[in-house]
Picture 1 (cartoon, helix red, strand yellow):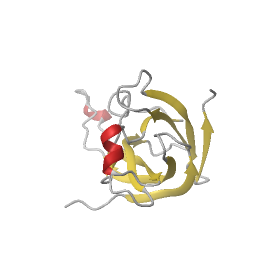
Picture 2: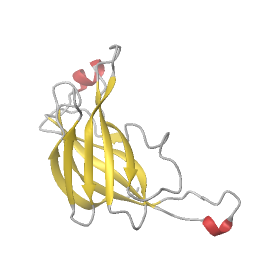
Picture 3: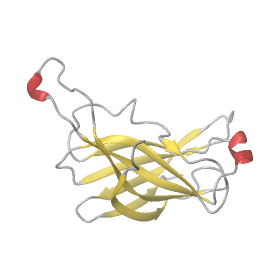
Length: 162
């Protein structure tokens, strides 16, 4: 059994209603360990094991099983840093990550990622997407960006313009 990820930076930032009837509260960055990817592409001098991070969030109130049957209840995100990444996050970096069981209650925890975190990165930018009801004409749209300042250990939400 693997141990849960370690919190690197904690915050509580309300990112609005990204899924119908539930607010998304960004809770922090979590250390997912080092990547196991061999980035050599034949050149052994470029081998790197990068630290990986995920963005933890909570959907408030918690999502019930009945709600989950009618809509998609996870937060999709894309990721960028202020430092060049050794590989693209275009495909693997976009997606739901993981989410707890749909049991209702005060909140349902989830995480998006993991993504590579260069050792010298200072700012991270997550573009979060609102998730619509399955079958709708516009199921995903940009909701805004979450900027994380690693040295200051702060995060700021900027909603997308309508």
